[in-house]
Structure formats: structure tokens, C-alpha cells
Amino acid sequence: MLKYFLIEEYRRHLAMAKKYSLFVFPLYIMFFTVLGGMFVDEVFAVMPYRAFILVTLISTLIYGFGVGSFEFLGRTMEKFTLVNTFSILPISAKKTYFYAFLRDAIYYTLLFILPMYAGLLIASAFSHITVLQVSVFALSVLGSVFIGYSLAYTSFALYTRSKPVYIGYIILVFMYLVLAYLGIAPLFTAEFQFTKNTIYLALAFLVIAIFSALGYLLTVEEQATVQKQHKAAFDSYLKRFKDALLAKEMLDVIRGGILLKSTLTYFLPMILLFIFVRVLSKISSSNVYTPLSLTVMLSIFSTVVYSWLTIMDDYRYMALLPLSPWGIIKTHMKAHVIIVSIVSVPIIIYLNLSSLSLLLPAFALFYLNVAYLLSITAYLAGYRVTSMLFDPEIVIKFSLYSVVPGIILTISSLNLGMLNTAIIIGTAAAMLAIAWVSVKRAKKKWIYYD
Image (tube, one colour):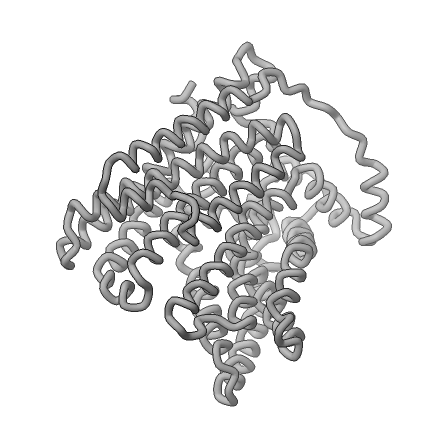
């Protein structure tokens, strides 16, 4: 079964991108890792070694947790993948989800961890870092990612049993990550990196084994599909939005648990980022952030929410209905703004409590960047945003369009002098012009389903 899970994953990505694209993506990882390894001294000049290691390993743990949650919760809602075959075939649910767990562990190790390791090995030839240091770091990252996978596996098992218990579990994971960064709770992979003592690596893999076993044991063997009546909710949304497609989209948001998934892939990482920059400011004795700069970062990270909205639809079926691709894209954009607002508005208000005069500019910058990124995504990736992850041409274009203005706005907002304010206004005007052109081109580009 594991063989077929891996084949399915390979074919899914081939269906979303060109054949060679899947193999090009690891090359991106290698390229940027080589650059990072070559300039490691400059990195440590800005950020202390211990803080860098903690941030890196906690971030990779969050990545593993996010990917695992995305795969388990997302695939379960799709209803037409191997992970759901236990409901119609004589296959154990426990074994089915365990195969899915192993698939992710193997697939993303090949896709991300090994290319990262290869890139660091190449960088060691051009810097003073050694093969042993690179290997220890790669093992630490691998352990952190696998801890994230195993935590996500257990979280899914709890999600199928009790939503309150699941929410409590997520809160505990979040609290642990904060305490681990502050040095109060142990992060075994970080201790292995600091001390090179293999006992800590063994403890890390013991944690992985424990939570993997918990995930397997707690998975509900028989998961009956319960059909719920959503007509009342649909009528309510239709009355509120005056748009049948948007009402259907918001119903899918509730049905697919997208608010919960957005919390895992968007809200939780952002909270940890805010904690990190505050601690980093204390370490460096200088402000490395302002409420405005954090608002810009918040809007950049919000793009991930859009992918959740595109994963629920079967576009082969959509093509048979009197619906246009652009109509679907426009509906995704509207729903994206609603969901991102629910999550982000309280954060923006909290960030600006000490300087309410910046609250209006903060909201303006946030929604400017959200609208800009949505227009770029709509033009480049269309109605299936997941395809962009494995198409080199789309990744390069999206990176250029998104990273450059994001960096300009973030840096300029650190010190609001006359020059920086002028730069922000000029950049905002350019972004609005690009967004307008992108929307016009997207309408012409996405006429047919393909």
C-alpha cells in the first residue's frame, strides 16, 4: 500500500505541473541552501548562533506540523484519494492513515531535507563549515520535521474523536513551542545541535515514536460518513452576500474546516514570528520591527489561506456547469479576504494598541498587499493555486512580484521619515498599477478550464 500512496502523490503533482517541474523544485532548495551556507558568517553576525538554531528548528517543526495537518485534514475532505479507500474497501483505517503518515515522511524528506543537505555539503566546499557540522545540522532539522509530522498525526486522530480535545492539544503544542524558544522547555533536536550528544537525538526520535504510536492507536477504526443538511446555512449566506457562488464557498469553508486549517498554517506561525522578533529586538538592543512592518509580513503570509479554498473543488465537474474559471477565481478572492480579515484584524489592532495613530495606515498597507498578492496569484496560478508550487516559471515570477515590494515596504516601514513615507507611497502606487493590469490580464487568460 505504501508503494501506491507514493505513486499517487507523484501523479498528483504531475497533474498539477509539468513533468520536469517536480524535479526542478529540489534544485531550488539546493541553490538557496548553497547561498545560505556560503554566507553563514554574515547570518551569525546579525543573529546569535543559539537564537538562529532555535528559530530554524522550531520553524521546521512547525513546517512538519503544518504539512502533516494539511495532508491529513485536507485529503480527508477531498473524498477521492487513497486515504479514503478504507470506507469502501476491506482496509483498516488505522493502517491507511499510517501509510499516509509514512508517505509524507518519505516524500517530503526526498523533496526538501535531502536537497537541503546536498546544498549544505556543496556550500562546505566554499566556506569554513565542515561536513560533520552540516550532517549534525541536517539530522537536527530532520528530527524537528519528523516531530512535527508525528504531532500532526496525533492531532488528526484527536480531531476525529473530540474537537475540544483537539483544540486543547493545539494550544499545548503552541505553548510548548513558545517555552522551547524561551529555553524553558527542552527541544531535543536543538540540544543535540548545541552539544553534539547523541542521547538528545535518541530522545528526539523517542518522541517521534511515541506520538506516531499515539496517532496510530487513537485513529478511529470506523469513521462513518455523516451527511449534514446545510440548506439553512446556505440560505443564510446567500441572504448575507447576495452571491450564490460566494455563499457556496463560505459553506465549503465551514464544511471543510478551513478556518481551523488556516489557524494552523497562518495564524500559529505568525504568532510565533511576532514572539521571535520581539525577543530578537531585546537580544540586538534595537528595533528590528514596527507594527507597520509586522503588518506587511502578516499580509505576505496570508497568501497560504488561498490554497485551502482551491483544494475542495473538482474542476472537472465545474467545467460541466455554466461557470467560468474567472468567476471561480473571483469567488476564491472574495472568500480569501473574508477569512484573512477574521484572523488578521484582531492581530493588527493588538499590534497597534500602543500607537493608535498608525492603525489606519496599518490596515491600508495590509489590504493593499493582500489585494496585490491576490491579483498576482489570480493571473499566474488561476483557479488551482496548488499548481504554482511545482511550476518553476510560476514560482520565479511570483517570487519577483511578491518579494521585491514586500521587502521595500517592510524596510521602509521600520522608520517612517519623509523619505521612507515617500517610498511607501510610490511602492503602493506601483503595486496598485500592477494589480490592475494583472486582473485585466487574468480575465483574458482564464477563459477555459484546462
